[in-house]
Length: 47
Image (tube, rainbow, N blue to C red; front, side):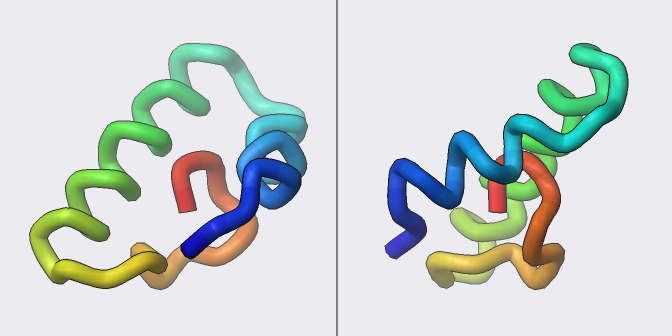
């Protein structure tokens, strides 16, 4: 299970807000579909 600290660290990556939101949705959908706690893209928002 990802920690709250990891979430904020991943969200502090320098990129446009719309890209961050896209990655959060995409990576969380991957986690749900695979039934895993990681999407396979460590360091990206939402993973």
